[in-house]
Image 1 (spheres, rainbow, N blue to C red):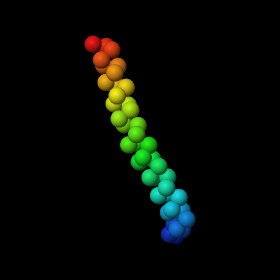
Image 2: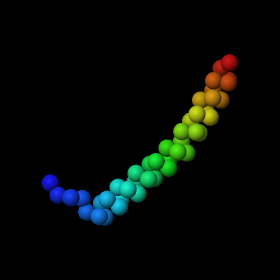
Image 3: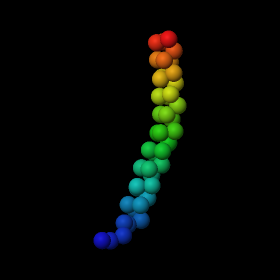
Image 4: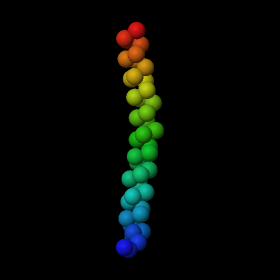
Length: 42
């Protein structure tokens, strides 16, 4: 088994950071939608 190249690590880190930033935006949006739907049901 060989070590991942620096380019692979850089690409993986960029993908991971993009995913984390997406989650930071998506979670509050989903929470707001859920709260709105619960408000409509009641």
